[in-house]
Length: 271
Image 1 (tube, rainbow, N blue to C red):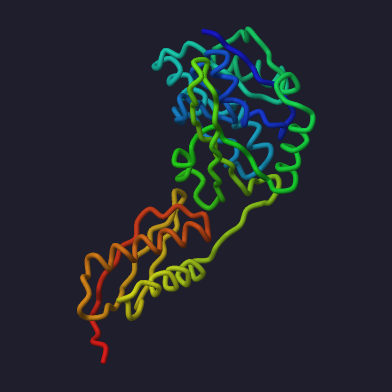
Image 2 (image 1 turned 120 degrees about the vertical axis):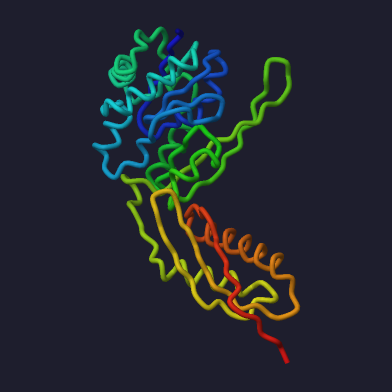
């Protein structure tokens, strides 16, 4: 197996450049902050960016937990991985990761200073320091459930192949994180108010009678009773409510909406 390491200080843009470098080095997998990524998909692992402390994040990135390590080792073996790019802040860190996963030795070290300019690294550090932005080298739909409650911005990257065609890949920018902007919570009352506000924008909805919000680690389940205006197609109206509520609540809160259950309690006739 070919193993290459990308080494650089935290926040200097390693994750941003990981996909491009893996293509250039003909590597089919990336190990970044506790995740095993292959072809823009998370194959195994847990992200260190979800940890509540800096110490916990370091342990997660180093596969300190045996269960976490074993799942990633198994995935590497089952998928017959031929090449891996390991990201880390030092040679010592990437070597420790390679040893924990049983993929030593590392054949090549690439340093972030070799593939980026000083201005680019300064800009990346500013994004991390001032805005708490972290890049994960997978599309947003891959991490949406795991990062419910974190603001996630898609980042599309255009890359020209050797045959002169264009390849489009997507990365995700995640914020806030434990070390910069801290954790935040959104009360169920705020979510209920947002749901009611969004639902009442739909023509044909007279009143929202009840809203129940259940928040879990993977996202939110919303149950609501609505009073509709007589004469409207109820099934169509309910679908419009679901779409509007999902759109506005996810945009305003960054929560992952798992389901929106609507019961039509009664009809009213407008005079």
